[in-house]
Image (cartoon, rainbow, N blue to C red; front, side, top):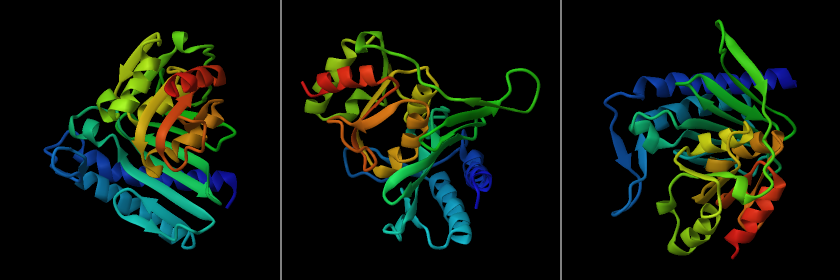
Length: 266
Protein backbone atom coordinates (compact mmCIF):
# COMPACT_ATOMS: atom_id res chain seq x y z
CA UNK A 1 0.00 0.00 0.00
CA UNK A 2 1.52 3.33 -1.08
CA UNK A 3 1.22 6.60 0.83
CA UNK A 4 -1.81 7.75 -1.12
CA UNK A 5 -3.65 4.48 -0.55
CA UNK A 6 -2.78 4.59 3.15
CA UNK A 7 -4.08 8.13 3.55
CA UNK A 8 -7.25 7.08 1.75
CA UNK A 9 -7.67 4.14 4.16
CA UNK A 10 -7.34 6.37 7.23
CA UNK A 11 -9.90 8.69 5.64
CA UNK A 12 -12.20 5.67 5.35
CA UNK A 13 -11.76 5.03 9.07
CA UNK A 14 -12.67 8.65 9.75
CA UNK A 15 -15.71 8.38 7.49
CA UNK A 16 -16.85 5.28 9.36
CA UNK A 17 -16.48 6.85 12.78
CA UNK A 18 -18.32 9.96 11.61
CA UNK A 19 -21.24 7.90 10.39
CA UNK A 20 -21.31 6.17 13.78
CA UNK A 21 -21.00 9.23 16.03
CA UNK A 22 -22.87 12.07 14.35
CA UNK A 23 -26.38 10.59 14.75
CA UNK A 24 -25.81 10.68 18.53
CA UNK A 25 -24.35 14.20 18.77
CA UNK A 26 -26.81 16.74 20.20
CA UNK A 27 -29.38 14.01 20.66
CA UNK A 28 -31.08 12.55 23.74
CA UNK A 29 -27.96 10.50 24.32
CA UNK A 30 -27.44 8.60 27.54
CA UNK A 31 -23.99 8.12 29.06
CA UNK A 32 -22.72 5.47 31.42
CA UNK A 33 -20.12 6.28 34.07
CA UNK A 34 -16.92 4.21 33.74
CA UNK A 35 -15.40 5.71 36.90
CA UNK A 36 -16.09 4.75 40.47
CA UNK A 37 -18.05 6.67 43.05
CA UNK A 38 -17.16 10.33 43.33
CA UNK A 39 -15.93 10.66 39.72
CA UNK A 40 -17.48 10.86 36.27
CA UNK A 41 -15.87 9.29 33.21
CA UNK A 42 -18.64 8.92 30.64
CA UNK A 43 -18.93 6.44 27.79
CA UNK A 44 -21.73 6.52 25.24
CA UNK A 45 -23.28 4.35 22.55
CA UNK A 46 -21.45 6.57 20.06
CA UNK A 47 -18.05 5.63 21.56
CA UNK A 48 -18.85 1.95 21.18
CA UNK A 49 -20.30 2.23 17.68
CA UNK A 50 -17.37 4.25 16.34
CA UNK A 51 -14.70 1.94 17.71
CA UNK A 52 -16.48 -1.17 16.40
CA UNK A 53 -16.73 0.39 12.93
CA UNK A 54 -13.02 1.26 12.85
CA UNK A 55 -11.91 -2.11 14.22
CA UNK A 56 -13.86 -3.95 11.54
CA UNK A 57 -12.19 -2.00 8.76
CA UNK A 58 -8.70 -2.47 10.21
CA UNK A 59 -9.21 -6.22 10.74
CA UNK A 60 -10.37 -6.59 7.14
CA UNK A 61 -7.56 -4.53 5.59
CA UNK A 62 -4.65 -5.36 7.94
CA UNK A 63 -5.41 -8.63 9.75
CA UNK A 64 -1.87 -8.84 11.12
CA UNK A 65 -1.92 -5.40 12.74
CA UNK A 66 -2.53 -4.86 16.43
CA UNK A 67 -5.26 -2.63 17.84
CA UNK A 68 -5.46 -0.72 21.11
CA UNK A 69 -8.80 0.95 21.73
CA UNK A 70 -10.26 2.84 24.66
CA UNK A 71 -13.52 0.88 24.73
CA UNK A 72 -12.58 -2.66 23.67
CA UNK A 73 -9.01 -3.10 24.86
CA UNK A 74 -5.95 -4.52 23.12
CA UNK A 75 -5.35 -7.14 20.46
CA UNK A 76 -1.95 -8.17 19.05
CA UNK A 77 -0.32 -5.19 20.75
CA UNK A 78 3.14 -6.71 20.18
CA UNK A 79 2.68 -6.58 16.37
CA UNK A 80 5.04 -4.32 14.38
CA UNK A 81 2.11 -2.09 13.43
CA UNK A 82 -0.46 -1.21 16.09
CA UNK A 83 -3.48 1.07 15.69
CA UNK A 84 -4.37 3.19 18.71
CA UNK A 85 -7.98 4.40 18.75
CA UNK A 86 -10.01 6.78 20.86
CA UNK A 87 -13.48 6.92 19.29
CA UNK A 88 -14.52 10.08 21.14
CA UNK A 89 -11.84 12.10 22.88
CA UNK A 90 -13.77 14.72 24.81
CA UNK A 91 -16.87 12.73 25.68
CA UNK A 92 -17.94 15.30 28.30
CA UNK A 93 -18.02 17.95 25.56
CA UNK A 94 -19.83 15.49 23.28
CA UNK A 95 -22.65 14.84 25.74
CA UNK A 96 -22.83 18.59 26.48
CA UNK A 97 -23.45 19.38 22.80
CA UNK A 98 -20.11 21.21 22.41
CA UNK A 99 -17.99 20.49 19.30
CA UNK A 100 -14.70 20.34 21.24
CA UNK A 101 -14.26 16.60 20.73
CA UNK A 102 -12.81 14.37 18.07
CA UNK A 103 -11.90 10.85 17.05
CA UNK A 104 -8.23 9.93 17.40
CA UNK A 105 -6.75 7.44 14.94
CA UNK A 106 -3.10 6.68 15.65
CA UNK A 107 -0.62 4.17 14.26
CA UNK A 108 2.58 2.94 15.91
CA UNK A 109 5.41 1.19 14.09
CA UNK A 110 7.77 -0.78 16.33
CA UNK A 111 6.38 1.05 19.33
CA UNK A 112 6.73 4.59 17.99
CA UNK A 113 3.89 6.82 16.72
CA UNK A 114 4.24 7.15 12.95
CA UNK A 115 0.87 8.52 11.81
CA UNK A 116 -2.07 10.25 13.39
CA UNK A 117 -5.41 11.82 12.55
CA UNK A 118 -7.90 13.80 14.60
CA UNK A 119 -11.28 13.83 12.88
CA UNK A 120 -14.06 16.21 13.94
CA UNK A 121 -17.05 15.12 11.84
CA UNK A 122 -19.44 17.82 13.07
CA UNK A 123 -17.21 20.67 11.85
CA UNK A 124 -15.95 18.45 8.98
CA UNK A 125 -12.32 19.07 9.96
CA UNK A 126 -9.41 16.65 9.92
CA UNK A 127 -5.91 17.19 11.24
CA UNK A 128 -3.34 14.57 10.26
CA UNK A 129 0.39 14.02 10.00
CA UNK A 130 3.25 11.53 9.85
CA UNK A 131 5.82 13.34 11.99
CA UNK A 132 7.42 14.96 8.93
CA UNK A 133 4.51 17.04 7.63
CA UNK A 134 0.99 17.73 8.87
CA UNK A 135 -2.17 18.99 7.22
CA UNK A 136 -5.67 20.30 7.89
CA UNK A 137 -8.68 19.70 5.70
CA UNK A 138 -12.03 21.36 6.21
CA UNK A 139 -14.80 23.34 4.56
CA UNK A 140 -13.51 25.96 2.14
CA UNK A 141 -13.96 29.52 3.36
CA UNK A 142 -15.11 30.65 -0.05
CA UNK A 143 -17.27 28.60 -2.33
CA UNK A 144 -17.95 24.93 -1.82
CA UNK A 145 -15.83 21.86 -1.32
CA UNK A 146 -12.92 21.09 0.98
CA UNK A 147 -9.76 23.08 1.57
CA UNK A 148 -6.36 21.57 2.43
CA UNK A 149 -3.61 23.46 4.27
CA UNK A 150 -0.22 22.54 5.62
CA UNK A 151 0.04 22.97 9.39
CA UNK A 152 2.80 24.92 11.09
CA UNK A 153 3.26 25.84 14.73
CA UNK A 154 4.05 29.45 15.56
CA UNK A 155 7.15 30.91 17.22
CA UNK A 156 6.92 31.48 20.98
CA UNK A 157 10.09 32.47 22.82
CA UNK A 158 8.82 32.16 26.39
CA UNK A 159 5.86 31.23 28.56
CA UNK A 160 5.15 34.95 29.04
CA UNK A 161 4.14 35.09 25.37
CA UNK A 162 2.18 31.84 25.37
CA UNK A 163 -1.42 30.82 25.10
CA UNK A 164 -1.58 27.74 27.34
CA UNK A 165 -4.40 25.20 27.41
CA UNK A 166 -5.46 22.37 29.67
CA UNK A 167 -8.74 20.49 29.77
CA UNK A 168 -9.37 21.45 33.41
CA UNK A 169 -7.05 22.29 36.34
CA UNK A 170 -9.37 20.16 38.48
CA UNK A 171 -8.03 17.05 36.75
CA UNK A 172 -4.57 17.54 38.30
CA UNK A 173 -3.58 16.14 41.67
CA UNK A 174 -2.81 18.93 44.20
CA UNK A 175 0.93 18.61 43.58
CA UNK A 176 0.57 18.55 39.80
CA UNK A 177 -1.92 21.43 39.93
CA UNK A 178 0.60 23.59 41.80
CA UNK A 179 3.17 22.82 39.09
CA UNK A 180 0.69 23.67 36.33
CA UNK A 181 -0.25 26.93 38.03
CA UNK A 182 3.41 28.01 37.99
CA UNK A 183 3.13 27.96 34.21
CA UNK A 184 -0.36 29.45 33.98
CA UNK A 185 0.54 32.36 36.29
CA UNK A 186 3.22 33.44 33.79
CA UNK A 187 1.28 32.76 30.59
CA UNK A 188 -0.25 35.46 28.42
CA UNK A 189 -3.57 33.64 27.92
CA UNK A 190 -4.80 30.54 29.79
CA UNK A 191 -7.72 28.62 28.28
CA UNK A 192 -9.59 25.53 29.49
CA UNK A 193 -11.34 22.74 27.60
CA UNK A 194 -10.58 21.42 24.17
CA UNK A 195 -9.24 17.93 24.87
CA UNK A 196 -7.70 16.72 21.56
CA UNK A 197 -8.78 19.89 19.76
CA UNK A 198 -6.34 21.93 21.87
CA UNK A 199 -3.39 19.92 20.53
CA UNK A 200 -4.58 20.44 16.97
CA UNK A 201 -4.95 24.17 17.58
CA UNK A 202 -1.31 24.09 18.71
CA UNK A 203 -0.28 22.32 15.49
CA UNK A 204 -2.19 24.95 13.51
CA UNK A 205 -0.33 27.82 15.20
CA UNK A 206 -3.15 29.17 17.40
CA UNK A 207 -2.00 27.82 20.79
CA UNK A 208 1.53 27.58 22.21
CA UNK A 209 1.39 25.10 25.10
CA UNK A 210 -0.89 22.24 26.13
CA UNK A 211 -0.33 20.76 29.60
CA UNK A 212 -2.20 17.73 30.92
CA UNK A 213 -1.87 14.82 33.33
CA UNK A 214 -3.24 11.30 33.58
CA UNK A 215 -3.44 10.64 29.84
CA UNK A 216 -3.57 7.14 28.37
CA UNK A 217 -1.78 6.07 25.19
CA UNK A 218 -5.00 6.34 23.18
CA UNK A 219 -5.32 10.00 24.27
CA UNK A 220 -1.99 11.07 22.78
CA UNK A 221 -0.49 8.63 20.22
CA UNK A 222 -2.46 10.06 17.26
CA UNK A 223 -1.60 13.64 18.24
CA UNK A 224 2.18 13.23 18.43
CA UNK A 225 2.82 12.86 14.64
CA UNK A 226 0.44 15.77 13.95
CA UNK A 227 2.28 18.14 16.29
CA UNK A 228 5.77 16.97 15.34
CA UNK A 229 4.93 17.17 11.64
CA UNK A 230 3.90 20.79 12.19
CA UNK A 231 7.22 21.62 13.89
CA UNK A 232 6.18 21.17 17.53
CA UNK A 233 7.33 18.94 20.35
CA UNK A 234 5.47 16.55 22.69
CA UNK A 235 7.06 15.00 25.78
CA UNK A 236 6.27 14.07 29.34
CA UNK A 237 6.82 16.79 31.93
CA UNK A 238 10.40 15.56 32.46
CA UNK A 239 11.18 15.47 28.74
CA UNK A 240 10.57 11.75 28.20
CA UNK A 241 8.60 9.71 25.68
CA UNK A 242 4.96 10.81 25.61
CA UNK A 243 3.57 7.88 23.63
CA UNK A 244 2.52 5.93 26.72
CA UNK A 245 0.60 8.86 28.18
CA UNK A 246 1.02 10.24 31.69
CA UNK A 247 1.90 13.89 32.34
CA UNK A 248 2.07 15.54 28.92
CA UNK A 249 3.64 18.81 27.75
CA UNK A 250 3.13 19.86 24.13
CA UNK A 251 4.65 23.02 22.66
CA UNK A 252 4.83 24.67 19.29
CA UNK A 253 8.31 26.08 19.97
CA UNK A 254 11.18 24.29 21.71
CA UNK A 255 12.04 27.48 23.61
CA UNK A 256 8.60 27.67 25.21
CA UNK A 257 8.77 23.93 25.86
CA UNK A 258 12.04 24.26 27.75
CA UNK A 259 10.77 27.22 29.79
CA UNK A 260 7.53 25.44 30.69
CA UNK A 261 9.34 22.23 31.60
CA UNK A 262 11.54 24.11 34.06
CA UNK A 263 8.48 25.64 35.73
CA UNK A 264 6.71 22.29 35.93
CA UNK A 265 9.72 20.73 37.59
CA UNK A 266 9.89 23.55 40.12
